[in-house]
Image (tube, rainbow, N blue to C red; front, side, top):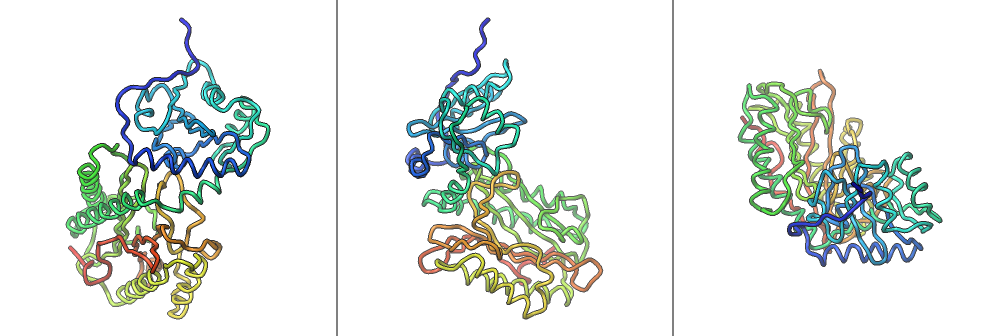
Length: 400
């Protein structure tokens, strides 16, 4: 029996989060950048770029996946174990590579790119090992890092993207309310987190009946576990007076949104209330700064000054916000749109960014714990549109 190195297996109906016109508009921008840089073919290997330009969010499980874009073609590449699902979830063509012979992935890619071409690649994603294979099989005339260009494309959201992100923010609110209802002294972090996750997955299924359901999660932290923003859920039982950190993350077709709030169980002590109110004030001040024409560094500097004037800057732990879109805790990030001192990107209409100041007070000190509020804002011509609905602050979030 002759076994192929790669083949096409297409069956079923296409099911994508956006219209064909939306993907063609994204591909047109990429092809314009390719023409400007003299790139013959882009070999996009990251989950976020493959999903952004094709709709296909792959599950690698140790295998290489990707998308090739040329002046005329756009083709995703997937392993035989996925059968036709990648084609159904891809705008454009899909080629399946087989496991019968090592490196059939690169032979499949070569069948679209051709040999000796100028190749665009993602220097922030392609491993040294895979780079060697790309050089061996594609024999590129030259290679150009396309990652910074694609990041700029992703930072500017279309009307359709903003609509999806808005739905995600509303879903995050649903999870937030479910978590609030589940909070009681004696309940474990994991029990509260599951209530929020389940509520969001049901909401996504209601809003997007043709979507794939995966990756939605909750980080719900209590007490000392609130000291870090990304601390995982534990089985710690909540106690009266505990500081809590509510973090809901619905994932819709690779698009990440979030809601993050500080809460307390039943009561909040005076020292904690003072820190909490200061962080809320910084949150409100920061949101007022987000408008077209201001740079990320300028916003950061002003919030730094706000905290320094209150002798709180030393408790800041990270930047004040970041972009949204095709990203996740395990893939993708638009690092060019973060509220940090070293990011000079100027905010423009159509960008989507969070405001999320956080102060962490060490355990054993008055007001100990991590305080964080997080809203998602769409930059508009006259300022911003806050698409997060769940309330912040002590009036609503002393619960249980």
